[in-house]
Length: 208
Length: 136
Ligand SMILES: Nc1nc2c(ncn2[C@@H]2O[C@H](COP(=O)(O)OP(=O)(O)O)[C@@H](O)[C@H]2O)c(=O)[nH]1
Ligand SMILES: [Mg+2]
View 1 (cartoon, rainbow over the protein chains, first blue to last red):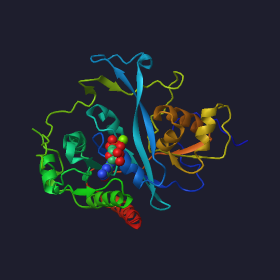
View 2 (cartoon, protein in one colour):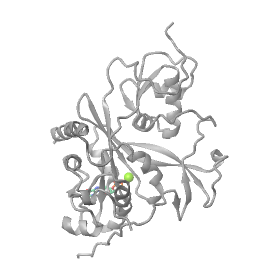
View 3 (tube, chains in turn purple, brown):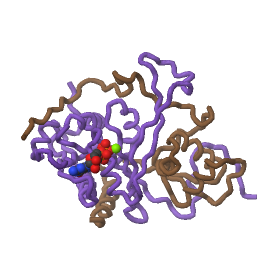
View 4 (tube, rainbow over the protein chains, first blue to last red):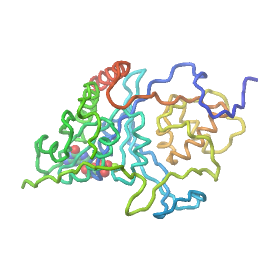
């Protein structure tokens, strides 16, 4: 019998007959209502999906993690999408909740990510600040996609760049998250940006 | 009417991602799935899993069947979790069990360096760009 009850937790890589594709990841961030779910759903080749992560809320000041399982547990949903780029490469998209309080989740998500798209709604630009703060602070490269909502004033990209205090070279693009071609173009612009060298002066975030 | 855009202040000083004024601490529970812990640290949301064709001897339950049924081709942990509507942490426990008994094989995601793309990553990025442009 060839069955081996192997309890070794290390992942096996040798059992595959055909090779696994390379799985790549891009994050889609932005404030509530900026269009993350719309964007991920429209560029994805699968129906809109969301992945839930468990989070536990402790009262402030609690450091004792024992008995954590008894604490109230809630979930936070991330939009999930897939774009098969060929037999060897699959791109996965994660739409991440915007608030600072979910940064622990972003830490895991940004690990190994190619880069990020920050969706900005100029009617409430402040909601995109947390995402810009995070990617800037963690050295994750990103582009800003300004979602042009109906009835909103059309700001010039330079006005958005100045308001977000972006490092030079970070692209600011227009986008309509409801249109697949528009979203795909934003993703392509991000990858083009990743292919440009990082300007030495802006490679590290400004520190006091 | 043009409204002046609010200006972002660059954050200075160490970030405090674990502390939220309104909600206290938010942490990931480490005990899930009937109170068991499993060494799931090797599973990332992007870890790919695929059925080997071996039957999951000793593992029974609709959750295992459902999870295994989604793993015919290489599929990431996040997608299995999305389809089953189980939290990712619970999904990882079930997948770890299935890997341990040989019903699934898994591959950790490729490490992609943050920051400037080294030469080895350039080919990868070019391939991604090419794939995206073909969809336009
Ligand atoms: N006009 C316009 N509406 C959009 C656009 N993107 C999203 N919406 C709408 O804005 C609302 C919020 O979008 P949603 O994707 O749920 O935002 P999320 O909170 O960031 O996930 C929805 O009603 C969308 O249909 C866009 O590019 N243009
Ligand atoms: Mg949403």
